[in-house]
Image (tube, rainbow, N blue to C red; front, side, top):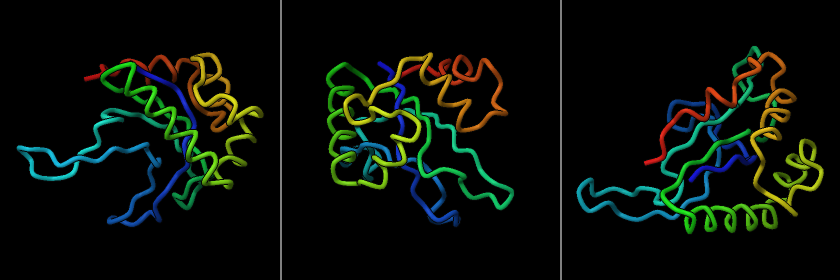
Length: 137
């Protein structure tokens, strides 16, 4: 299952803390790797436009999240709703791009195309198709 959404950008751009999206997480210890893994958003791709200084231009990114099931998509949506309530800066920034953000937190492919072009007008017209080729594990 896949969903288009807008998520906050976190990190300070250093090697130890790179810029990235704040993904909904349910961390568990992997039995073989013996390290924490995110069971929810196992694959993702994001548009994070940057300025000449390499820093993000916006505080949010357009994201395509892939998960294993409908139940996990529902959990991701629930976690995004919690983030909207607990992080007003994220909600405000997201509403600049989607005025009714909070009433909905999933975008159609066409909405993703329009928002992506607003975030970065230099994106190719088919960028959503390029982003959407990844297989969900």
